[in-house]
Image (cartoon, rainbow over all chains, first blue to last red; front, side, top):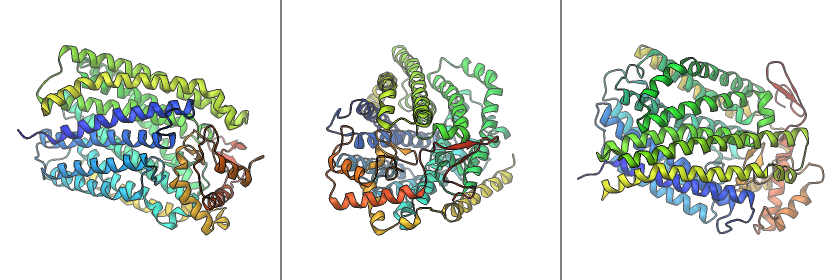
Length: 440
Length: 145
C-alpha cells in the first residue's frame, strides 16, 4: 500500500524538533558552564538548535498542508510526485546544513547560519511547493476559506522574504552595515509573519474540521483579521531595529503599524469568554486542547509583543532576554502548540488508528507539563531580561557582572527547558509509535 | 467579503510590499555615519565576522547571541579599543575559545569593528522619552543622522 507522503514530513519534523530541543538544552548549559560539552561548542549548538526547530516548523506545517488540501478541501493534488521531490530536497539540504555546522562552515547570518549556497535548494523546493499548491488550490472554483488564503500568502511571502534575507551576498547590501542590518531584520520579521500565516491557517482549518463548520473560515471578520495580519507581516518588523540609525520614518511606520495589533488583542479579549467556553466543550479532544493552549499563549505573547513595540519600552528591553521570551513564547507557545495539534489530528487520520486510552493520558500529562513548565521558562526569561535591562541602563555594569547576576535565572531556564523536553517526549512517543506501526 | 474586494486588497498589499522594500533598500538606509570608515579591509572583516559565526555569541546593535558582549562600540568604549580586541582574539578567554585566527583575519576584524563603531551607539543609555512613546537619544538626530 502506498504510504501517505505527509507522514514522512511529520516524522522528520518530530525528529528535528527533538534534536533541536536537545541542542537547545546543551547550549543553555554551555551558557551557564562555559566549556560544557566542548565537543560541539556554543557557536555550533546554537545554530543547530535554531535550524532544527525551524525545520520542525516548516516540515510539520508543509506536511499538514499537503494532506489537508486534497483530503479536506475537495481537490486532488496537482502533482503527486512533487511532494516527494520536495521532501528529498528538504532532507538532503537539511543534512547539508547540519554537516556544515558540525564542520564549522558558516554563512554567519543569525537564524540562517549555513553557507548561502544551501539557500538555492531551499528556494527550489519552495518553488515546487508553491507551484503544486496554487495549481491545486485554483482547481477550486468557489470562494476559498480564509485558511487557503493564509497558506497561499505564507508560501508567496516566504519565497520573497527568504530571497531578501540572502541579499547580503551582494556588496551593495553587505558592505553598508546599517543597510545590511535593516534589510536582514526586515526580512527576518516578515519571514516569521509568513510562517505564522501557514500555522494560523492550519489552526483555523483544524477548528473548522473538528467543528465541521466552515462559516467562521468564510466570515467577513476572518478576512478582516487576515488582512490586518498581512499588513503586519509587511510593515511590522522595525521594532527589531529601533536603535539602528536608519531613517526615522522607518521606526515611526513600524511603531504605528505595530499598534494595530491592539485591534487583534482587543478582539481576542472581547471574544475570550465565548470562544473559550465553546472550545472547552471539545477539550477532551487532544488536538483542541493544544489549540486552546495556543490561544492563551497568543494572548500573553501579543501583549508582550505590543509592549516591546513601544520605543519607550523597547529602548530598555532591546538586546535582553525579554526579546528571547517573546521569541520562545511565540515559537513554543503558539507555533509548536498549533503544530502539535495538527500532528494529533493528522496522524490518527492517516494511520486509521486512534490513540489508546493510555496513550491519550500520556499525551495529556505531557500537555499540562509542557504548558506549566513553559510558563516558568517564559517568566524566568522576562525576569532575566528585566534585570539585564536594569543592570545595563541604570547601573551601567560590565558584561561580566551582568552575567553573574542573571546566572541563576539562566540556570532555571535551562532546567525548565529540560522539563519541556521531557514533556514533549511524552507527547510525541505515542505519535512516533503510531507512525512506526503505520510504516512497518 | 466579495472575491474582487479580497483580490483588490491583496494586490494593493503585495504592491506595497515591493514598493516599501525598494524604499528601504535606498532612501531608508542611505545615511551611514561610518561610511568614511568603509575600506577593503573592513569589508573583508565583515566576511570574517560571518565566517567565524561571531553573531552566535555577540551582538551588533543588540542583535545576536547573549553569550558575549555587544561589540558595536567595543573600539571606542572606555578601557577597551583595538589593542584590547586583538588581545581577546589572539588568546581567547574562559567564555570565548581561541579560534586561532590569522594575523590578517584579526586586522580585518578590527577594521570592521572600527567601522561599526562609527555607525552609531549600542546599547543606548542616554535618551529622553517623549509623550507619544517615541525616544530621542544622543548621537541620532530627527533625520536619523
